[in-house]
Length: 231
Image (cartoon, rainbow, N blue to C red; front, side, top):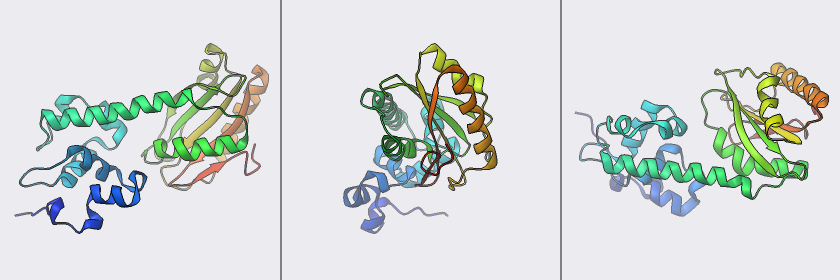
């Protein structure tokens, strides 16, 4: 019979709640944060193991957010109360993400780096496929909207200028910041990354819309095209 250690039986430095109190929430893995939301497991399964099972079934927190209550409760040990807690926690995160635009003003390359490290890194570093995100800015550098324009495979994301600039025209954006993740964790730009960026910059010049920067998100690291002289 397989035995799962209860969280209270684990060393203090391995318990999710105690780890959060000691080193902060940003240092915890997804399954540890989810275990705190769950609160407790079952007689046979710890909250950590339940969290792992959920993430295995749904692949990522983003896909978990999109799961229905029925899909969540199909995991053994997840009843309506735990499913509701999960949905509520992820919805809070979604609303906070939407409210970020109310306080983001981008006036310099330093601002881009700060935003990439504070917000984009947390949001994009754990995706298992490449996601291409665009931040659309007004003439004063204020964020109008952020939008995912492409989701690719493990190693590449197909991005067409039409998809990038469609929203720019619709929302009267004056400039854009491009961002995408590398599931490998290495944010070094590939030849395709460089070529795509050049195509988008040229398209932006024709339309009178500046590309301020292109940021690649890795595992706790970022690469800015502006800072590295690629833009």
